[in-house]
Length: 252
Image (cartoon, rainbow, N blue to C red; front, side, top):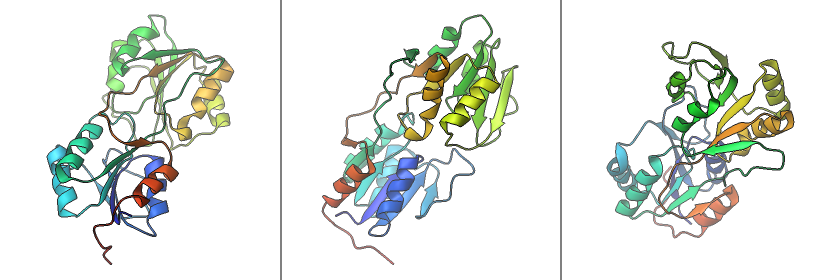
């Protein structure tokens, strides 16, 4: 079993995996640093980038990492390529922990698009009230459709200079229950939901709420990713780690 593991995290799965294997392994969790007030972690944690694939490969070598687990958000588009290149360069086994994408269920009204940039045009010219659940970093994309009222939830304050004249910001941290989502959508009279297809159970309630309320969803497909060993459950990730040879002793 690998004894020194680096988890590239930022998701609930990454946190739960780290908690589960920490009693037996020397685990380090790396966060990109996008969220300024992340949830407290139970294992040693670093924040910030590595300096691309070369920097990550150097870290793997210097820290004598036995195994690398990629458990970043499915829309962290660059990291899978960096992790793949770094793991190959440092000769470190790599696993991706990734939930399967959501699939539309009976009663869903989905329109799938290849990227967030394709969404504003689909909203149409008639003003709508749109729940954006796509994160705060790409909100400026919707400046080309300023006629809509956008509802955005975020852990941290949104930038003051966003070019969206009709924006409602709600400061809160999920996960949100089905009741929470229905209450929000009814209170603001939401008539469109925009979501990225993360596949994460912790944010799935919004889709159920939209289905029950008959609200169309514009679903952004996942970005491309290089081929790599991938599992969808924490148990499968633990089993994979147990099957790896041990090269390093844990340090006190």
